[in-house]
Each structure stands twice: as C-alpha cells, then as structure tokens.
Length: 89
Image (cartoon, rainbow, N blue to C red; front, side):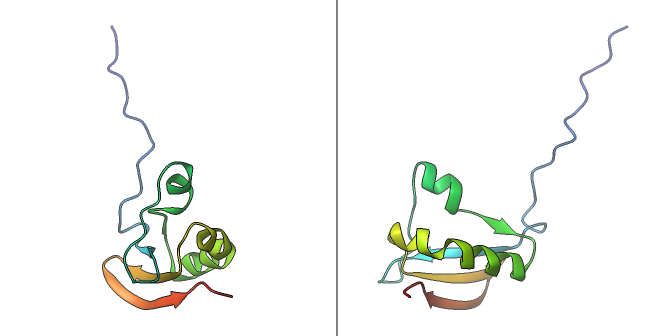
C-alpha cells in the first residue's frame, strides 16, 4: 500500500501574521519599485510587530537611500500608521 504524499508543514505567512510593512517612496511621494536582488531583500518585507518593522528600517535606511528611496510610510495591513518619514541623515 502506498500512502499519499503528505502536505508540507511549511505555510507561507498570511498578511494577518505579518501585518506591518513599509511603503518605499521617492521624493515625489510615488512608490519606488525595486527589482532584482534589491527587490528580494527590501521590497514587500512584512513584520509581525511595529517594533520589528521599526528596527528593520533603522538597520536598512542607508541601503534604501542608496537605491533611490527618500521616504518611507509605515502601514499596519492597509492602515497608514505614520509617514512619510525622510531617510536623509
């Protein structure tokens, strides 16, 4: 007897699991679209808490600025929490 293949225990995080995210913006306030390895590392990153999101931006703001991001806005799912916040030193 052959058993059916079991589903993977991995479950991608649902938006409710990681509701906090940053919108990356340029000087005009338009959303910045990153591509390639930069997109994988910096775009569509979501966090389980506001503190985690704020720690991440504190660690990555300089790299984001080098990619043309001038401002960021913090969201909890689709609710704007604060921003735009400048990334200039």
